[in-house]
Length: 381
Image (cartoon, rainbow, N blue to C red; front, top):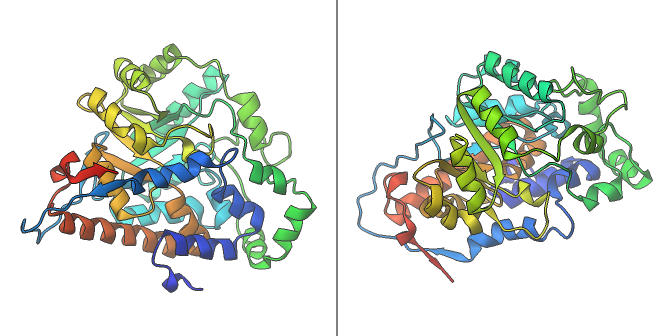
């Protein structure tokens, strides 16, 4: 199977599975506990049907949106995800370049493998920086100041990860950073020598957003210990309100799932919220972002930008989310599988296909612009 044979999400996933060692593929592919929420994220779209309008004169399609002050040519963006150079040596560089090609936003994770400064220098498009809340308040302020100095437009605080989820696939293979694989995990690396060759012949793996604060490479701190020892489960709304004031700009919370929390985000001055269950990787059995979208948009959609992620595999999924009232959607695995399969060329192909699917879907829906999509287009089974 080649990149040119990939026409959808499942094709990219299949190619990534062929190219990655099992423990790394399962790190991307896996989720928490029984992976019920992971599956629900996509199933939630499949239980909602589109009602197209015809004869609307849809020669020209405008897919642009403005979200958190950023003008995007497309109504989706590349969500920040961790460890990207582990999947392909180009990592965030490939994702940033592909996002720039299509005029959309990309995110850099505090567990990213390329520095946010380098990416800001290389690409002038909208960039969001995702970070976690640490026990060390000084570290939190230092990370925000660093992003400000780099010219990052949007801060994204992840609020659903005060402790790590129970990802049993990783436990079975022994996957961790730094690597501490069990025998079964090591054997899976042995049968994919091309990945190992790429990994060893390119720049040393690092986490530049954290390397001043955490020793990941020397074995002193694993990512699981980072979540359990450095992140602060005592974080409160008052703590976040201070950070919003300190940043004094576009600030969104990722992991909001209830109306009450959405209203609180408005009260403390956030400019965006992302309905997200972390791709099903945190609290298994929780609702999907799409499940919660209507009630949260109805409650706060006129006061704050409501975004969602989780389960997006098709352009019609994006259209359903926009019709329900989301300002934009984030994609994660949707670009990680093509990144793993083929680097920048893979990400560009995947984003390009999603763009074409959205444009085709809007034509078939009888809509020229995103703001013409509404709940009148939707029916639930």
